[in-house]
Image (cartoon, rainbow over all chains, first blue to last red; front, side, top):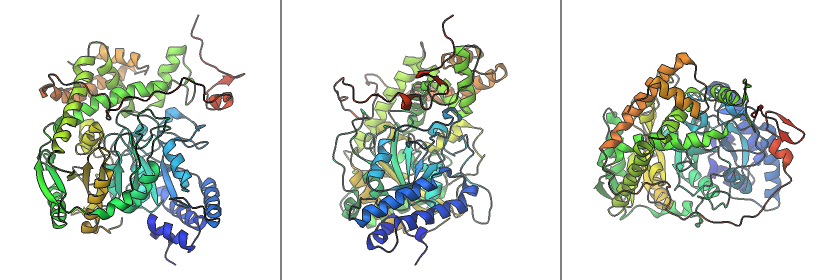
Length: 487
Length: 95
């Protein structure tokens, strides 16, 4: 029998259904894989081995009586931004201390409902604020990929770097992740994995540690498009506990994969060419265009004129929302407290000690742009620019059904290479952040290796609630790319 | 618009984050770097544009104002840094 960790998610589902192996055996293989690799990659912050085996045995028992769910027996990793009942949840921040939630996030509840098994909690940038995993209070994740002939440690991207690295290194069959400005898609591109951020409101935000509530959206990172479709279908769905959760039917994404792109119009936005972008990425983009043309799609040039304003608008809206959301960490009801001389001093010391530098910077920016005298000039203006960005897409949809772009302006970079220049770091999200501001679904799929042997991703952006078209296009691209490289 | 040391102290106080005096100028420079970059938004014509606060144009749903759980005192206090006799214990805030 092949090593169980070599099977992907949908193959593992078939093997479990055929009785070739049990979830307990599959789960144990993954725990062994984590044991062997986690010391060097630092992808898992917590491994819940006993709980995993207990869930796997319960899954085997359900399957034995013919009661198997859509993810029955599948071992998954969970980004440590999702609250998991009784299991320490840190958001990769010291300020949460030993916080072990008394409740479960709705997305993970859906996964357990469908029979999945939790392997543990995955590392991330602190409060999901970062593009390299270097802001984690528990040390960065290391990308399992290395440049050819080099031993330089690379970033797995961020913020869902633990999720992406764990999937790429076969330390789980799939992982949950979240995306506020590109935090699913950029790490997916950096690790040769598939990551999708669905339409805002598809996945409940209940029980996900909040960063910027109007932008945050959960999604899976998986090894291939079909695995991603299976996981996302389970994660989505209306939830009364999140007031922005959409009460709409969950589409059949696996079925959508078979639809093809014949006659479909694919938009190519001219503004997604940025200074200093490697020629290889431009070439890969052209290759993606050729693949879709060959499959019968019509390629249309489009313009998204406000693209260059998306990141600056994001760096007002997201910190503003973060400064409000993170006000709850005051050391009083949960999390870490540092005693001061009085109440205010205790607040200030708890927050100064508990938050890392990038989080503090963003809280201060947010506080500034929301403060009296600056609100109109910054915050209100950014919200208006956000409306302009949405309008760009609305105009584009009169000409095309989906949009093809690169996912990130570079391949994975070295740890420490950009950490002293916030704006350089922020530019990682230049192609992904527009979909967050406009609330649109967008997927990154691995398309090729660069000259150093590192994976590069292409992104497909769809209309709101049209994940089906996104998966139709992604499936065609995946077949054409035939990406099979491994770290 | 640029942030000086006094502004950093003011917003740090508003945000309840202690900043050591020797870090104030560094933080001011970092914030100015980001704010200068953000200034490019002034190029965008936003005349007559409604500010967008939400990614989805739906009316927020209403629910009944009803109690749906309760009797979870121990759950609520479970993660408290300090608790006593069913209460959160916090620093004295009224003299």
